[in-house]
Image 1 (cartoon, one colour):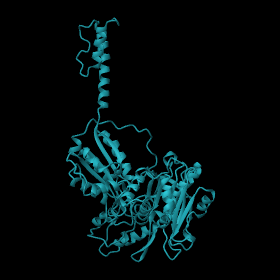
Image 2: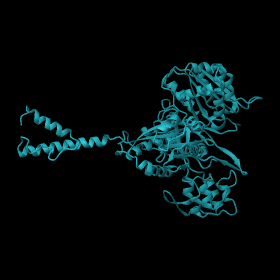
Image 3: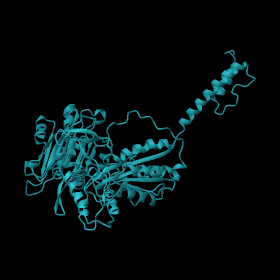
Image 4: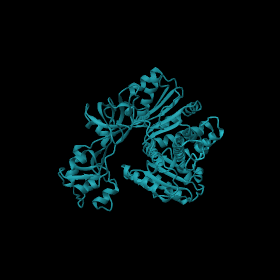
Length: 581
């Protein structure tokens, strides 16, 4: 063949570009001998196959929006799982927090999946509150029937308003005209199986299955699978468990130090992250449960994970406190007395479950999340926690929290406990070391701010820092007093505002100090300060939020709507972040 023959080159180019090649690719009339024709046909057929394969891979999937409302990070993690799974089902997903979109954006969507946690007493999470309010508003826009949706809720059956945020969203989307593709699923704290069933049902539903585009093979992960996570914890060694609160305090608060040596990159945390701790139950409480049930503990039972001895299951696998709907169902009860726990039900005369029925009525034991109170730069290979022991009286007997007392007394120094890092995407230090920070964390809410300040000291950050801290009594409840006062001396803490609610005739709280310093707070905000809040959600955080709005009105000359808009802008620009529980 002559390379100077333009007609032959044109034929080759046309054959290679053809999406539907004719057979044979090289016609008999072409000026090639049979051996050349066979070779060229093979070459062009291979090129055609590669071109078609590339076209198939490039075919777009069907658009899908995945939205989440997450406080502790679980709903966000499940949304990322949905993104991976959706691509294998013929969809091209976009993932965002609920508050990153407007209700006005919904009519343009055709396929929508929502994973929404319920927070506090039936409230939406911080990153879903604005969307929730807009959706529930009387002037929310009508939605087209072409919007196919499904909602998965994350909640806790021990709360009266179980999964209320998810139920609100699900009902309102339907009321506004959207089409429910798969039923709402409301998950309890042990959510893995229920979530997986909901995910499968959503993609198997007719509106999703019929609209799916070209499915893609699962993407190879850029990172190896984590060696340590919630279901595969690292066994950390307890190095220090020291009492922080003083003698005579109404609270027992402990400073905990755990060694992460040998954990590798999976335990590399950032300030603002939380540590998940897997506790074990108190052996004395297990004995009390067995005695109340009339069981020895040697009985064989079957858990979701397989067979186990009853006592061992009660020690490390089952929640010995919470009365859940499954408890009533398994034990044949119509209702439980208000506030009753498992031991209270077992003391009732008509409740006598056998070993298997006993465990069938108990929820799986769950890890507890604690805000990390150390900087990895200041304490390499270790993690610190600030843990208040939960102790209270109920029905004439003393009760206690499982994880807080496990860390505070039942886990001996030198012994190990299971932990994992729960990363936070929305409660971290700003990248700008010059940005001023206002940190509000009474009681154990000081934890992440001790970490923030250690980190800023290690970085040599020049930004101003203002800490609001308080509790009941200065003499017994001033957590990390020496360290905080040292930071004031060195200048790391530009200002410290303390509030002691039981040291004077009037109760003084951190929100009191905020209002007293309104002009200075407003000045810091005008200088670009970021506000961080950590602690009790139901009272402190709500009161602090209201105090900040009052500061905006008093010092910024805003009306209530303007203050709301100002706070919304702080949130949207990540200058108002909360770690509340």
